[in-house]
Length: 259
Image (cartoon, rainbow, N blue to C red):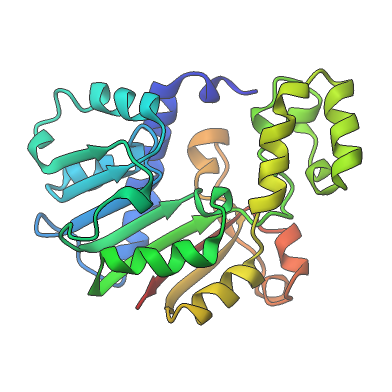
């Protein structure tokens, strides 16, 4: 487990940095972002991703099921000059009333791979998107080197061991027990069930009536700049065009979609 997974203030700042430097410019290639924009982040955690939008004066809403994360977010934003433009909601997104005013931008960063029944979710979330709104999605394909989020494990060996998460559950369970990670078994198994490939994601958005306006296959995740001092890099087009195989070589997939 790395220090950033314990230090939530640092994690918050890393999220904010990546959104400001990489994600907002990515979206602004399609839509201008200003104080008139309404932004929703689903699975906002401590709210680092929405800070750059709030800094620009946008109306921002963050929704997360984790009460502790929302509490930390409220603390982090307690003195923000545009605090009045921020609403933090501690609920399951399915419990958020669909009578809420719709949004120009919806963000889902590193969350889709944790959601059960992704088809149901992608259909439901359209209720919150304006007809001309944009939906930014970023996720690591399940088969990528650390698609099992093993970097959060306490074991120094397993937290740096790529690809072992794709082993069959019985073998994965044995390995986790050997390295003293028995408490992590339910969480790892849940990721086995919810992890998503690029191909499955594309089938879902096609079925639910979305269209892709922009997409990028990242060999080096833009977030690795602040985390590991690595320069972002797109995957070679020749490799990113190979279905299924590409999931093993891509650390992040970015897309902007619309209804």
